[in-house]
Image (cartoon, rainbow, N blue to C red; front, side, top):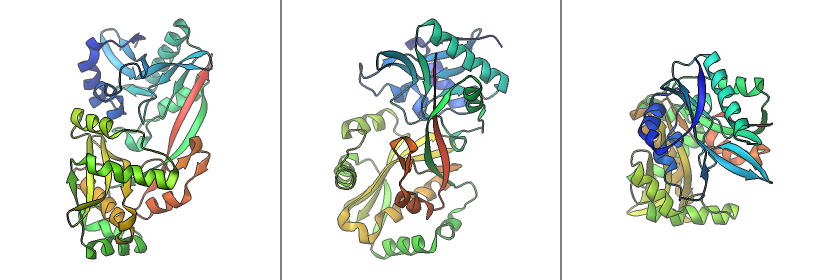
Length: 326
């Protein structure tokens, strides 16, 4: 292959998203449809297509960012997962050539360096491949973050196996939720869920959701099967929910999870996560990701949060970010 990097333009939009669907490590966060939800002016798009002649062999959703006076080419900061998206047939050598093409382009355009933010771990890839990490190391990148993500391997489960896959304490809480009359179903009522989420984040962490209600509703409208709400009810009252993202054909991802403080003793979150596992099995996903359990770029583990996730069979996987300065 003779691979060159060229800037993305809107004329490639359909081909870009079609490529993401068939790539070995493409996610919903790499698609132009997802990236289009960001308001104009929030980021300076600097996305690249990796071309072998007339054929797209790779992509980099990216932005130009000022970092203390230095112009950096960064994997798109508005996405949970970034990095190179690579053709399913690409060899190790091809991936190295793609990395070279990105670095050559960045130097030519006077960028001070390249940041590959939040590379999708192997558990989120439709075809396991970690050659991008290898080439980042070989080309002189340094790891800037190593966060602990978490994943439940649902490929080994059937619906009958779910309860046995939980810890004993977790099973008891799921059964308590059932006895308390907690029910769970898919809903489109993000408007009712958002104050629950905002209240939990403000009360527990003094923060607010990354997305506003208007933004999450826009994402659901753009990608109705990509952004869904799994809601828990006590009677007719919503008491909790999980925003589920369809990462790709093999993976679901929990973007937000929250339950009403007043209903905690009835354990709606245990019912919600059990149903999320069941949904992943029904949809023939390979994995259910429960998100990052570290803080400050991975420097601190939220042990209570990860202990909770482990009770559902969650296991740790890495989410790494790498950077090179020329």
